[in-house]
Length: 258
Image (tube, rainbow, N blue to C red; front, side, top):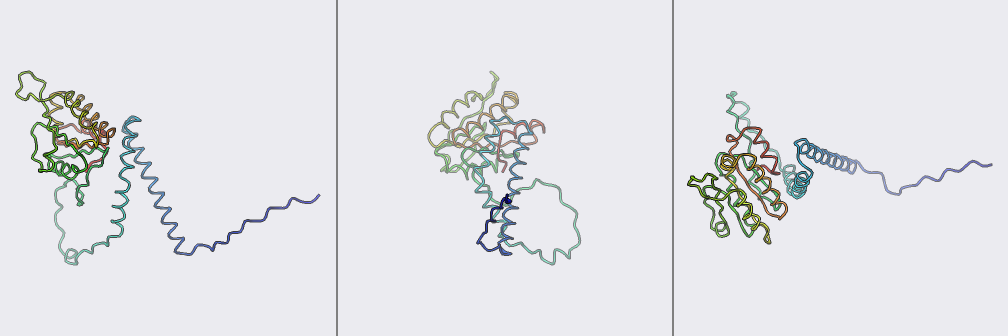
């Protein structure tokens, strides 16, 4: 009885990889692995914040929609040559450290993509209005929810609907709209073809007049409505006006923080 013969080994006619090919493959695979780790860390971080399955889906879809921009930004950061510091700065005596200020990107504000929501934390709506102007050309309509209508460019003003947030007090002079009434108007505009750009700078006012929980439900609804209709939502809030825990609850509704 003869022994079972082993099948012949499969031979590959391809030449072994060169040093450059092996280095390229190693770098590509390491970058691919780092991208997977970053994506999974992002999902775990959002899940640990108590987001529902629907909110996680919204966050993931928004992140997927921004992949091309993030890849292009990473590519440009890698190919840009490093700046060499002047020798004079190395020879100067050390100076006292400056007061800490929040880090802001030197890059201009990128327009908010359809389906995304952005929260800007600033005392007055300066960068938020800049972001509105940079994003408005993507949409046929703009809805501004405010207590004091801002000054917009001629192009933006021509397609803007202003909804004044009002007080629920009967003796108040501010007789604008309640969050429920605003939601109905926003639903009507954002459901039209092309969606709309929704802007809100009255978070603090609504939280004072209608309680924080009511305001948070209103903001969460605006974020969901923007995702559902392919619209965009921009809001700004003074971080000093809210308790850190309340500010954290507000931030959970948004997926971008320019």
